[in-house]
Every structure is written in C-alpha cells, then in structure tokens.
Amino acid sequence: MLFDTDKSTVKPKYLPLLKKIAAALEDLKGNRVVVIGHTDKRASDAYNVALGMRRAKAVYDAIAAHASPEVRKALRVDASNDPDAPAGKSEK
Image 1 (cartoon, helix red, strand yellow):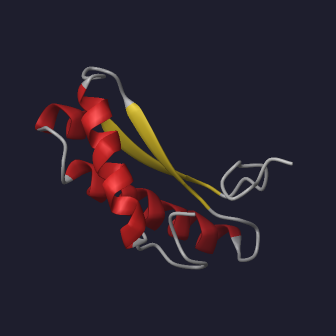
Image 2 (cartoon, rainbow, N blue to C red):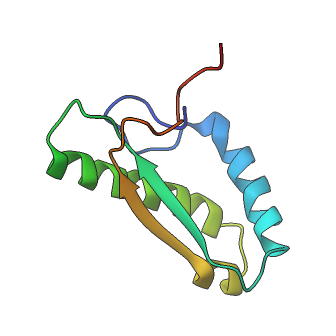
Image 3 (tube, rainbow, N blue to C red):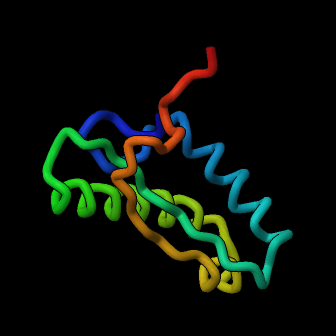
C-alpha cells in the first residue's frame, strides 16, 4: 500500500515506482490519465473524500516531478471511498 493508515504521504519505497510510471506515461502523451485516491469506510464520507483527494494529489505530485509538461497537463486527480476497490486486497 502506498500510504499508511489515515495518511497521505507516499511511502518512500514507492517513489521509484512512481518515477517509472512517469516515464511510461511519456509514451501515452495525449491520453488523459486519472489518479484516484482510495479510502475505506472507517470515517465519514466527507473525511474520506478529502483524504482520497490528498492521496491522489500526493501521487500526482510524485509523478509530475518526473513528467514533461504535456504529461502533467493530462493528469487528473479524483477520490473514491468504494469498499470494493482492489487496493490492499490479496489474491487467494
């Protein structure tokens, strides 16, 4: 998981991965990419939407630090507190 519980700072061990994602997005120039910050249902909807947006913005910032202006322009952020989101679930 990119974040600790109730946090919106990307764990340092994932920064190299986000740098690789930035490089891969250079090949997709002209395509819109949406970064969605997920949360769960442990807090209020309003709190979770705000946390999700902070998380999405943190990922955006990490990618944007290594991306061209064209790629940054195509990146968007959004949030979700959908409990069915795949983040953190393991395959059995």
